[in-house]
Length: 454
Image: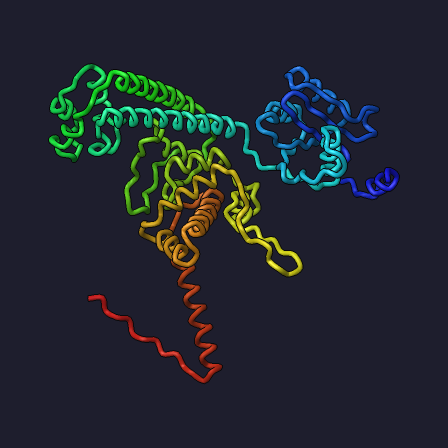
């Protein structure tokens, strides 16, 4: 059996003779090179930084030009960066491509199997943006984690208020707003008069002050007041961290190259509603920075806010030329069906399970168009009536992704007239098919005059 396996491997066409395979672990890293490059073709290295540099030196000594490794947690990031700095072409491979390992399962056989698959050209590298985009992406993902931790403290505050029977959430839409924080500070300072607390509301609060005063009558237990104080302090602590992080993100965004030579004014929006800054948006002009980097206003696309555009640019980058077309971009996002056909029978046509922050942002944007006016709103409601809500969200997110690809590639502003022209062409083709079919049956189609709307 061993001789047959050697003959079978010799007959395989080697497309990458200078390829190596790496199996990454938390403490040990196994590397395999072609047998003719070293007497010991498989070596084990520790995960310390000095050992990673020794690994890179050994690969250079073995005349390796390209390396394939499996994406395992975050353990691959230091080695990936070191090998990339040495000038090696690094393939970060999806784990699902390496599941079928023949023979017994071990770290040695894993790295040899990866090296063999890479040498015969059966592995594809995962998409990874440039290093400057990755730096902004790391900070932006950390910002999302800080927002989640701050929201947990909001829940703790609401729990403490409910335990004291303070129904502030019935009269204020946001307890972390200016009015809510003023009332909480007064409560923690010792104020218990509901009328005095109600007077701290901002003039923009629509709830009557009498109703606010009734909502602030409660049972002020010391233990609940203490937990409210700590929760409010924790929330404000994370808000200070987010503000500090926003300044660092702004600094990194300013270092990114501009898509246009001269900074121009923001173009006029085609959306019906004016641009409004959301509560969780960064403190700086994020929309202006995104326009400078992308060269086009992405927030003008329906379902795309400033935060959604930031997620797209940090996860993918402003340059989408690595994707051959819009269909490949949508497939990478997991927003198109993955048809599995065997023996002429369709086994499955569901979308792939992809954990992509960009795809999640597009799905959230598509879900917000359920009541929107315009082409995308009509498209979402038509797909929802035809396929259901879940499939309608996916179909709308897929269409938004194709629009984003076209806008980022051509730098042309979004125009909804293209969809109306496409619909008009489809209507004309349908009319031609009906007339042709009617003529074959001996009938003639007579259009009815349009009804007056007055």
